[in-house]
Length: 79
Image (cartoon, rainbow, N blue to C red):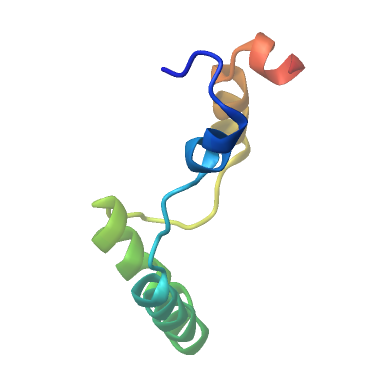
């Protein structure tokens, strides 16, 4: 907690940690290439790998959309 920090301290206080994204960028590029080459089969495989679920369909039904919308608090929708 900073209480009335010196102007000289401001840059250090607001500094964000640097994130090395090279490996992440390569992973995303590989995923995109795989999806482009293999389509829905790649999406099903990644859903299983990353989300740990087996989907029977990639399509979101109108009922699922309505349920998701109803789960969002009105205050959040209004913000």
